Image (cartoon, rainbow, N blue to C red; front, top):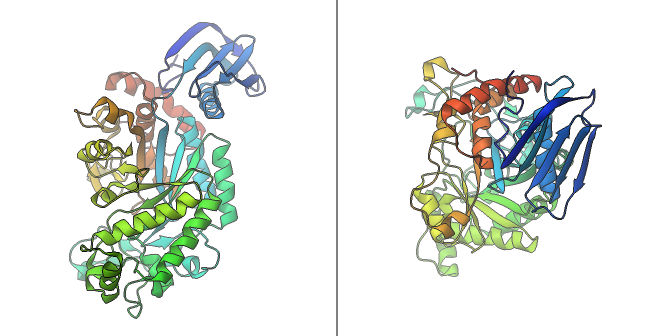
Length: 469
């Protein structure tokens, strides 16, 4: 028979016993409790013919144990193998990023993804809520953010070439947003499954949708722009007026109050400076702030966001471009551009999350483009995710300790619905989950055999995935 624990990341200690536990409802027969003698990250799960017991050193570890139990019982039809497992993860941050700005997903579809994450013991959902192509979160006092910024008139068809005259569009409006009450429900749904939701409000770039809603937030308010209908990087970034910083304070304060997570992601990536270079107001601000380089303006935004969020007991996370300016000491860096960024961020003492675009970007093609649905580009197979080297070879012991986790990325330019998001996520997310947990290394062939036995679990959850070759 297939390994009943297929794709459960190999634990520190597994002991099999003879026989099975026969039950019609395994969850009723599971006893659960905290054990102060266990380390806070460790759990122990025991299944015998008499029943099942789970104990752990913390609520977070209990969630990991429950999700392991779910893996074991899914698809067993009442006959559950007897086993004792003691286990703990290597990384505290085991995440998936989901972009709902480029293509909006209803909360119910995100709940399905959360269920799948829990099944694989991923514990952080990084929710990308704002971008040039759509603003998705309600902010009290700024209704046009969702009324105008949450809707684009049409969307680019195909890839974005250099010849604008050749661009074609679908002619179909696309939009959607979440009320704060809806997001509170999603946060609670995730919490009950051991998953923390971390919001991202990208700034000071990737905010054309906000500038479209409130032109006074831009650098040239008289030059009206719409919500962006193509992909890529927009030159329309936040201006530097007092009104802009009042706006940011309101947004970040409301986000911090809504999301219990101790972190807020502030983006910080791909922020062009061309508008600041052309803006007399930006030049005047530079003189006021004592800056000599336009690049320092972004550092000012980063520090402002960090200060506002610190008042709420939060720390900032940012993409690795922010390393190019001065940073608060407690910034968490999300490394996406190249492995050398990990060496730089950790050598400067910053806690760092591995999110490199070579191996953890699930918007890349999974096989030859001619054989796959349209994607942004690249080529990352499930084997690449499982076998690739994710960190530089020469990291000191102190630097290694600053690596707090691993995260996969779902950017949705070419994922118009939940079915396509699932297809691009799986089974690559399965490989990522095992690496994020920190399981003992196995050969690709060993993992692939277990993965094939695991796919019926995805079927049981109604998850679409790309079949293995």
